[in-house]
Length: 114
Image (tube, rainbow, N blue to C red; front, side, top):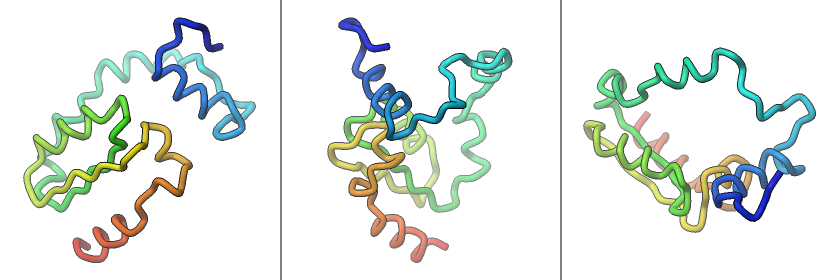
C-alpha cells in the first residue's frame, strides 16, 4: 500500500505490480525463504568478462533508479559496447510500455552484431 512516505521507486513498482499493468493474483510481495541469501551471493559484475568482449547493448531508462547498474556494467565491459538511454523511461516502463521501447535500436543491434 502506498503512503505519503512512499518513495518514487515504491510508487513506480506499485504502478506496475499492483495495478492491471502487471498484477497477477498469484504474485506476492513476500520473498521466498531463499531469496535474501541468493541476492547476497549474487555479484553480477564478477563474471562480465565471460560474456565481454562480445557485442553488448545496455538499455536503460534515463529516469530509472537502476540506471547506475547499466552504467557500471557498461564501464566494466570490454568493447564493442553501447549504452542506450530511453528518454523519459523508468525501470518498469521498459517492461510493457511498448511506445518507449526502441525496437529499431534492438533490430539494428541484432542485425549488425549477430
